[in-house]
Image (cartoon, rainbow, N blue to C red; front, side, top):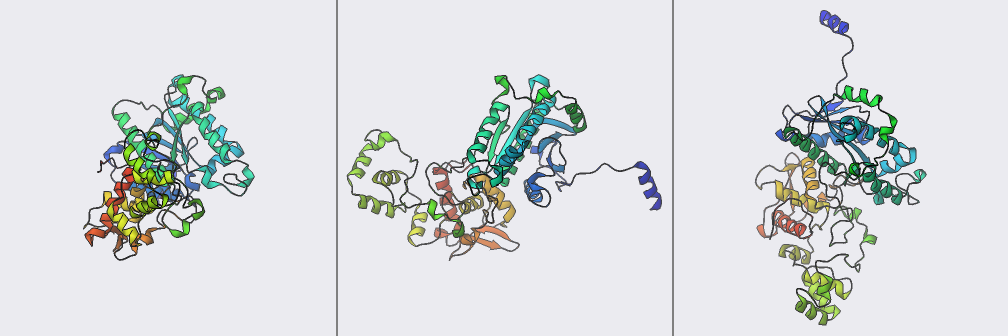
Length: 455
């Protein structure tokens, strides 16, 4: 042993390895030879959210390593060569903080120089991207500023800076939270693997060669682009992000946890901003004009009674009630549970996303899904307008699970080993039946991303 130590000592210090990496021995073929490298300061560093993000990468099987990166938060290697894709992640607070201390412009200059090196010079065939995580409106503090009051950055300041990014040469991908971000990064890694296999992109430099070339770059190469062909670039992957939620609801809750419900934001008489009918229909033209005309002749109370019978809201003006009546009737199991005062998750909500995820990805009778896996799958459904990982507060998308676990019968059951599955008995009111109904409603609202055709 002493001889081995002497031999190692003569070789000098070993090159530092990654701070963390995918523990799997095998990798999904969709990722090919691609490995994502993330900066060790991501998520606030190892003392905060870094390991949480790594855990999610482990669940998804994304090949990754954690190292110190000089430029960008995420880079992608094909073998030992850098792919021409650089990604910077910013939460809403990070945007405000970067604008305050000057990092916003400085990081952009460095990324444009990196784009020049990796993208064949002035051709700039390298994608430089921002992932903007979260909604600045939800990160306001006292005084209306985002993040910290002393940063003096309003919501408009942050959104204005984000909206200018395409003209500055950056594509923008919006995410609801870090679970959504990890899903985007996984898709980018798969996209790079496909492009390499099909000869769409070339890789030239190792990371050391890349840094050496950055050091000798002229500072002018970091200036914003002046040619239109380098402005408004497309992102690496298509991302659906709608901070305002679906078109046909005014629900304001993150989950169905009653402690999180902001009733002041959900007045009973607030009309729904968008309906599944046209103005021409309401004015007596277009399809269903005869049915609408008959409804207009009815009294306000009669319309409310019809809405109540269908399990719809009864608040609002006459036009709002007619609009609800013109929409397809909810599945009967949803209406019957509401009449019996039994719990039904709202659409959109985190609890509905959990149930739809179980409906899509779990086979009744087999072992249930673990919490971590279920949270990832729920995020991917698109059924919750807020991130399953929460918005940085005490509550997250799992907070309302207790409502799914109670009741007789409960909608979800907890199995041995902290696994979760939908209940199957009695068939007419089981968790499986309710989840199927929620899945139908999610498709009607244009939320579910499963790609299946229902009804």
